[in-house]
Structure formats: structure tokens, C-alpha cells
Length: 102
Image 1: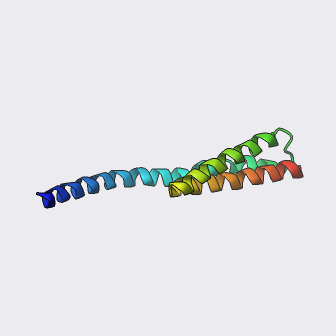
Image 2: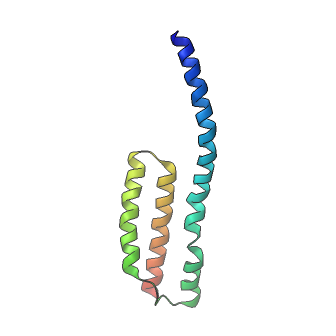
């Protein structure tokens, strides 16, 4: 009896794994695509050398929250969360640097 339970459990796990892999692909796409959406703003700041409309305090606050999420990702070993928040922190630092420079 326990052997058949194990087989059913394995079959269920395999079916779940297939559906999870599709969502994992979507998440990994979003992990890189969503932060990349900031590149037009970054380019605008650095090409025009103008950051008057950027509120640096907002980006400092966002770094704080991203650090919380990054810590949570490390605690739960959640790679998409770790990668995403590492990218966001990097982008926020670039934005703050542009604000300080210009």
C-alpha cells in the first residue's frame, strides 16, 4: 500500500512541476523585464543631464523596501525574488547617482 501511495504522490508532483515550470518561466521573464522598464528614465537622466523632476528621497525609500524583500528572498531561498530585488536596488542606485550628478 505505501508503494502505490508514493507512485501517486510522484505523479501528482510531476503534474504540479510542469504547471509550475510555466509560471517559473513567466516569473523569470518578469524578473528581468520589469526592472528593464526603468532604462528609458535612466537614459533620459544621463543623456539630458537633467534630474530635476526626480525625487531622490523616493528612491532611497524604495531601496529600503527592496532590501527587506531581498532579505526575505534569501531567507526563503527564492531566486526570482533575490534576483529581482538585486536588480531593483542596482537601478535605484543608478537613479540616485544621476540625481546627485545632475
